[in-house]
Image 1 (cartoon, helix red, strand yellow):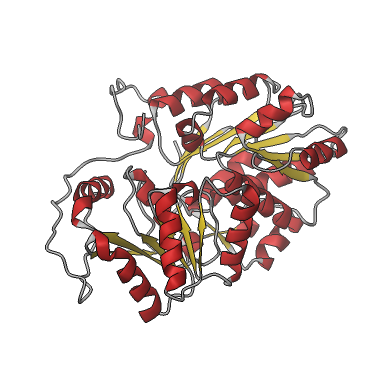
Image 2: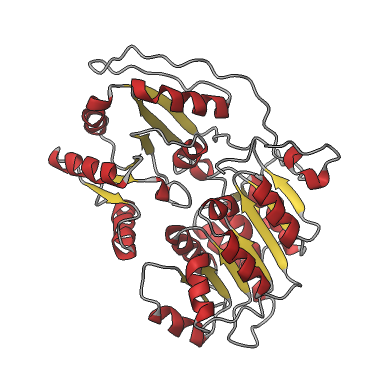
Length: 419
């Protein structure tokens, strides 16, 4: 089982080479997060990893830094990739690649990302030129395999990032096919925010005597996020949102809606209220989504309105505010949404605009968190709704991993999420 790290661990004490430590220092980091402190030495030692880490804990660095070091210790003798990182979404793939290029800039490793929504020809050209590290979404990777533009026979290290999300999106069959294309002897790292029966079966199939790492209770939120609920009628939500943005002078806020139509409609309203805003969702092509995220990061747009496609993986440095304009249908997505703020020890605020019709969804979130989110009534936007108290429940990630437990598995465990 994973050992809890309670003291501050310096990156320089984790066995990383000088080039990586220089890149870490350049970005202003000195101490590792718990997931990094536990994972990096074990990965460097060659162990398989099964890690459960809440969003915003620094898991990308937890696997990317040791991966860069392992591959840099020996030169690639051919053009085929030696490491494969599978991610569920285009945005996450692009961000993981950005991280790898940034932290590995002083190393002689070649990396690229392949994902859908963009022209496949430039990707083919990069693969032909040879790479060491490949970041990919399962669907586009299988496209390259079918067109014989990708050979995975030299993969030494496999990373499944946000494995639960990939299974939720229906990639399990592609993942099984991809695994068969790689050498049986390799190092495997599996990262998942939740733990279900499907994740256990996948872990049992691909991991070899893995080290189990858990850094926080599943579906918990980090302490650096200040959460609050503002009760408001559904009809007045957009007015309250624009009032908060202007009155509090928010410069950068990520707003979540349930639907693509709702995201576009809210964006138009904010623009009409003289607030710069842009929407990002599945109907936008990859170029538009990339530009929207870039404008938001630069600060040329104050508000990024998103559906849950952006709930995981978006790494926006020091994002101060996240707003749940509408509560998510699945309670676990609340954790993933608000995890875009309060990252890597920074403080952030998560605001939920809750209408009377959303009390059932709010009850589910309270049940998941095992505590009630504080309520703050904004004068002029009052409602009379109240939510019932959450029931007590236990939530322990490691005990659910029945491969290492003598207890009989439950018919449906608490990390099952959506079926």
